[in-house]
Length: 121
Image (cartoon, rainbow, N blue to C red; front, side):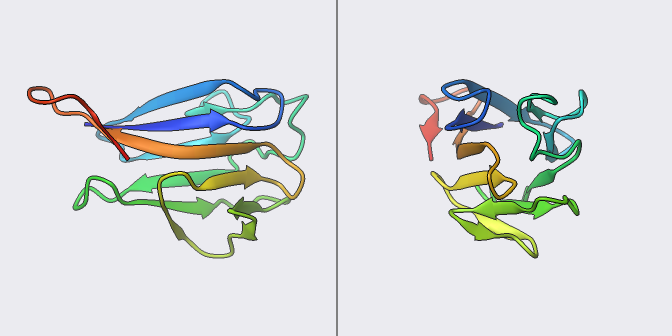
């Protein structure tokens, strides 16, 4: 099992943490929609689209994740660079939704049902 950890750096949720377990769906949405796995404030985080970006887990490799902008008006940035095509995420990468939007630091952990403690990546 893999859990993605989102540490909110800026925006209305600054200092908060979301931990999302990746299951059978292998993907999650970042945005303002109530259905988004990582939700942002519709009023306070105006740079964020309803379905702003998607993260997909490559199940052939426990720690490979790809981020894609979903045609957002304000863009998606990884470590300060605008994402124009899918980009592989690394532990500690900072994702910003919109040129002046909220930022989250991304990490993950692989958790086995039986065995040693989780391995933080």
